[in-house]
Amino acid sequence: MFTKNVIKNKKKENMKKNIPRIYIKNYLEINKTYFLSEENIHYIKKVLRMKIQDILELFNDTNYIFFANIIYISKKIIQIKIFKSELKNIESPLHIHLGQVISKNEKMDFTIQKSIEMGVNMITPLFFENSYFQKKNINIFNKMKRWEKIAISACQQCNRNVIPKIKTPTNIFSWCEKNASNDIKIIFHPSSTLTMNYLKKSIKYIRIIIGSEKGFSNNEIQKIIKYGFIPMRLGPRILRTETAALAVITALQTKFGDLIK
Image (cartoon, rainbow, N blue to C red; front, side):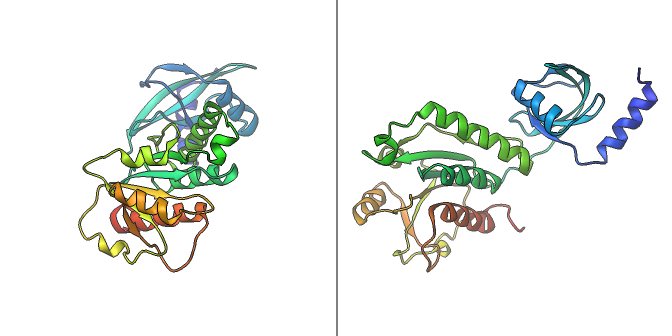
């Protein structure tokens, strides 16, 4: 049995270390106990090799973080008890909705992971009619589950506490047609004469489109522009789709968000 002083000293000792973070899809309260999911049990036991009274940091899709002790471990069960919570809002003041034309396999995974680390708030995977995504009859449900796991993992790594929403994949022109009156809408194209310097005013909401590996045709660009998207160029070089998303988000966060402030 642990005495109160031993437990208190253990908390102080652990709080000085880098505390592992896990996501729990629950409403959390101080002094309440919770059982961890099978996935988190594996991570804590097999990867981190944590023990009773070790401390975890929890996040649950709010601007609060919670600290908990492990109070029970068995082969299939880990029980924790929350002892502290803190308000920790590190969300950017710039709300970015990324419309990303679906790229193949690991490229799309990489884009989702890194754009979330850079502060994007929402991602809508986009496709064209008769695209590779449709022709291959890809299971949307499985893709969504995978992307959601990547989103949680990215937040766990970068200390974000609110998980960006990944919307159901949709046709690019249907997405472009949806109007949000307070959104600035941009499509990045190397032939455009406009740059981000065109955006003079303070921006809070922005919707951007990033193309796939093969880019957009002139007809596609013109159709997207008709839906109110402003064509801009990021620079003189042609970027890969996964590079373009990160470069654009970085530039926007630097100019209008909270990067390098």
